[in-house]
Image (cartoon, rainbow, N blue to C red; front, side):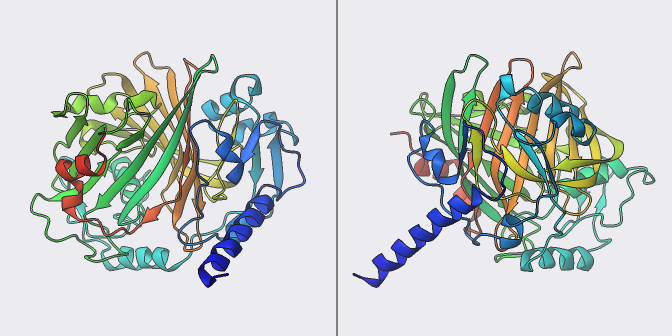
Length: 436
């Protein structure tokens, strides 16, 4: 028996044992329709086991002590109504529509690891060097948190600066995240999408060279973002591509359509449209908020202590008839609430999102439709690997009116690929994700 075979065999045994442990870390009962980790292969369209995170499992995160639990097999969910955003409570308190769900409270674990330390050092090093111009665009940014001493209530431009702190939160220099979206309507009909979520930063780079600024950068890019579709066959090869510029102004937004064999330039207003394939997210609301700040007015709504899934397990889970992340860890945090209001609304008037005061991540966001009603609620469960890299293993997006659910199970972050600007040309992306 070769060493390579024996190594692979031992790793496989470890993974099976780990996932069994991860599925049984509490004595509370598991709902019949819940699936965890390697059990997810039962989902239609899934044929491979989701691999472990690149940095390994974070024992401190995976072994958190649960203080209290609400929901399936635990205390009544009504007890924490005031500790959850109203749209989220309205969803998980109706298991007959959205499946069984449980909220497990743990103590907050502060961020750690060499990458977080590098971010803190960059924040201190470049403190006071960036500023907002008259339009509200961030200028002279290099790395770290742009406004570390911000008090949004006292600063006249506090809401806008808070938005920039969120957009420049600790992120990877580049990433490739394979994702699976299971789209379920109120009739129980299911559609499965597979895609890659890829991105490259041109500033704030602290992990791979060149850093902190990518050079050469002749067009002055802030970042490139693409969501190429892999399956089903009718979606395969569709390649959206967004360029955002560090110099401000409009974004460039293109989409390659393999059926037409043409690249189409998208209008700026189309960032308010839902993403292709029926995903319950707009281009501006992905990751809670990815909009161009020049298209919004920002209002600071204060702070509120609530439970949020900020330090979660990286084990993906879902209910066969409901949501993803059905038995996750939550922590009480006194977070910021920020509302972004479109200056020229087309389908959406506002995006309200909730921002952690230390890591500036967001776990919840809410879109309001043109009638002023809650439209789409987003929920992101933020896991951590052994290097404290962010891992989004579970994500939910719920269209409140249509009761349409997009539950996304993301493979673990493949970060620091060493992408170049050329990799984010449409020509290269079409070759990489050819439909034929």
